[in-house]
Length: 440
Image 1 (cartoon, rainbow, N blue to C red):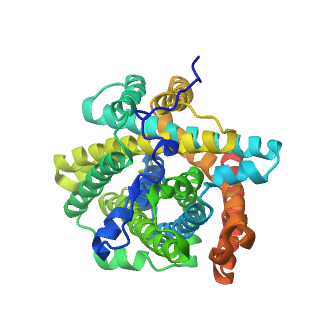
Image 2: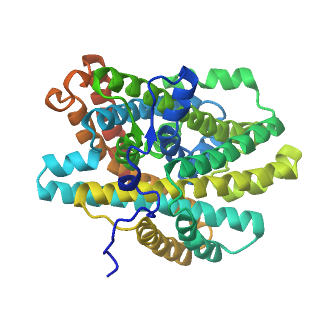
């Protein structure tokens, strides 16, 4: 039967098979401890630089120059707050967010939350499919439908990693993220941004948000940045670190894993900011304020920046972005299925299910809207993610402030105030974003 799964030592990199696989020796030097704890934050950060983020960053940079960089900064700080709460929950409760939801909520509520989490994962995978297909189209000239078909074979990547272990997956994702960052570093060198203006763009300004269309794009950036399924993912994979017992050991683990998350999400912040800075310097700086599509950006970079290498690097970074998200999407899907349903299937089967469910709307959308519909579907995928975020935040905030569950590690007053204020803001702006898209 398709869903029957003997649990074996050669299973792929599923969380249930690798929990506690990285042992932390209390006697290790500080720098070696940090390296041992590093990894979960990197896997989570991939979701913050996937192809779905590119469209909003490119349009914002093209239309408003460096003016909305502060939105990227604030969205990233919000993500850091939420992901550090996930770290604390996983390390103290020794259960992930989905498992705790299954234990504490009614079956009806669990099915609702599970369906929403699955929808978010499929929406994210849709962005990966479209981003990967678009990258193949731009780099090699294959048609978008053919590129979508090629992305179906990334399941083979999961099969190739069978039995590889979690650290191997983390190393591969690190290489892909380094590729993305390296490509954009070279891109910025070619585009020659005005760095004093870049610095001013990070200063929050309500006046800039009052420009026509700026608030809508700002909300889109927030929606594209904070990923709901990452909350389930991080609370699970942080448990792959086997830490010393006792409160002292937990505090050390929380400290190092929080540092891992902050550093990794800071890298994601730099990548997202680099995309906007590139669009601002290459397009807005040359009078092109109408670039809102990834394909258009690729075509215009070479003539405006003056380097064919810049366009090639743009396509390579896009391809690496989609592929890096493949691994984390698979693990997130497994976490959600195991946590909410207590159902375990091999990771390649999980990957196949998710990819098929993303391929169908991708192919139908391209058939109905044509190649120009890729950008619209990318935006739609981010709207779905935005709509699902509050449903993942609510249980996370409730669990981490529960002293019966967390003991002395429960969220303090300042963290609770910030977290619930963030919940209120994200809920309001996401409702506004969804209603605006549906009405317009």
